[in-house]
View 1: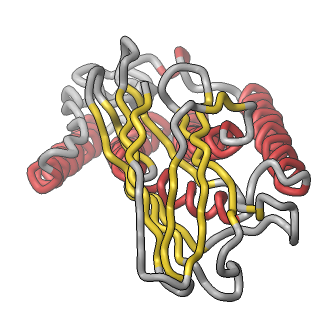
View 2 (view 1 turned 180 degrees about the vertical axis):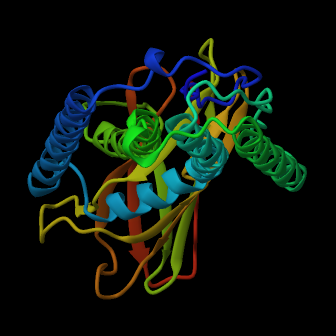
Length: 338
C-alpha cells in the first residue's frame, strides 16, 4: 500500500496510489514555474486596467471621487460572497492539512516497514457556511478519526515486527508526503490569488464602465436650494430588460453653464447608488447636493449628469441642472427611466 495522494474533500475510504498524483521534484518545479507565470500574467492584466483608469481620470472622463464611492458600493454588494468564498477556501484547506498529517505518518511507516496496511481513511467533512459550528465539530471528529488511523498504522507495523534497519529505510514515501504538503499550500496560494484578482478586475471594470459613451435621457433633473443648503432630486429606474440587473449610479462633475470656472466634484450623495433590480421592478434614487459657498455662487446654473449602468449594455445619463438661490425655495423632479 502506498501513500495517499487524493487529498480532496470528496472521499477517502481507501488508500489511493501515490503515483497517480504525487509528482517528482522536476514536475513540481514546473508547476511552481507555471504558478509564477500565471501570477505575473494576472498582475499584468490588473495593471492594464489600473493604467486605463488613471488615464480616464486624467482626461476628465471620470471624477476621482467616483473611485472611492464605487469601491464602497462594490464592497457592500460583494463583501458577503467574498467572505463566503474565502471561508470555503481556508476551511477546506484546514481539512486537507489534517489529512496530510496522517499521510505523513503512513509514509513514515512505509519507509521503515514496506507493505504495512492501515484501516480505511475517514471521509473529510465539507465546509458548510450555513452552520460553521457543526462543521467545526465534524472537523474535530474527522481529526480524531485520522489520529486513530495513524495510531493503527504504527501499531500494525510494530506488531508485525517488520521494520527495516537504518541502512534500508525507504525515504521515497516521506519525500512524496513532503511534496504533497507543498502541493496543498501551492493550491491554496493559487486559488487565493485567483479569487483576489477576479474581484479586483471586476471592480476596476465596473468603474471603467462609468467612462463609456452614454445615451442622454429626455428627462432632466432639477435641483434648487438656498446657498449653503442641500438641493435634492429624485428619479426612478425601472428594469424593463429580460434579466435581473445590478444597477450602479454615479454623479459626473458639475460645471457652470456659462463656462465660467472649472468643472468640480460637488459634495453629493446618491442613495442607493448600487443595487440589484429584478425584472419589472422599480427603484427610486435620491440625489442630494450640498450647495457649499466654496463651490457654488448664487444665481448661475450648474450642469452635469447622473450616469446609470447595469440595465442592458448602454450607459444612460440623466442631465442635471443645479442652481443655488438665496431664497428658501426648493424644488425637485422625478424622472422615469426605461
